Length: 49
Image 1 (cartoon, one colour):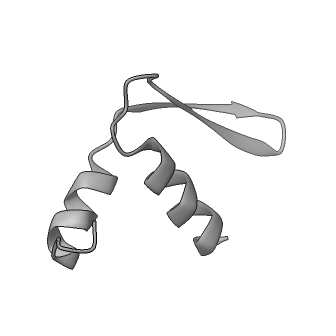
Image 2 (tube, rainbow, N blue to C red):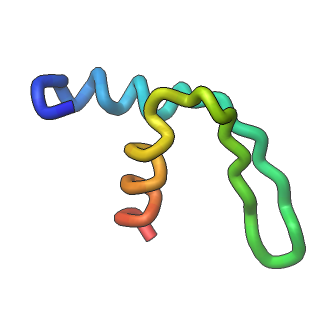
């Protein structure tokens, strides 16, 4: 990802198919098992929190 532009990274991370379920006080993201940017998505989400 170091050679990508910020626009490319933003598009790849935002356009991830996920099912969002709400359980009580939290939201749960269910990503598909073949998601190519799953690790990067979780890293970014943890840094945002």
